[in-house]
Length: 250
Image (cartoon, rainbow, N blue to C red):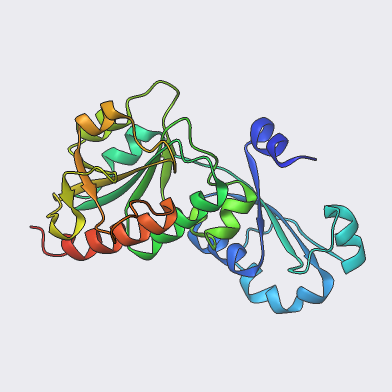
């Protein structure tokens, strides 16, 4: 069964490894459907699995059986099946606190980058992640793994096709800082608003000119002759700076 079939037809996703399973269980944001583990891992997982509802099945299999099920040698020996439960974008933004840091993503289509951004969002205390319709799925197995489970703990929502990402944020009192090599402000000099969203676009094309024209544009100072960073790296730098600066915003 292909992963896109799980997601597209049933709203399910696959989580792999102990750390990711811990995040899924402890966060409780997405219902856990079932767990499959290599039998030699079961004893060490009893404490983690104990809080699960009695009706949640936990299957144990010999390593060779598990390898045959997934189609390759799965060294972690732990898989879980979850059911996605995402809030509507309006509900997500309406529930933000008075001081909030939001990560906004436009057309980020690489699962490694998506996972890295979610990991950074969790590490620097962002309150939510908002994606446009052109972004890839944060609950794709690889994105979850790269995020070290942060994709399962961070509140996020996806806008429908054609929705105005900047307009939706601004309508909820969130000021948008758009990251671009052509940004008008240096990141080190930015004083964020109480409610701020850092908006990141895809590597290469970046954010559209129309988006930049409606937002505060910000750049990261770099050495001469170089003007761009990987989007996940950029998000780490920006969120660290905004989180630190936000502590002084009243």
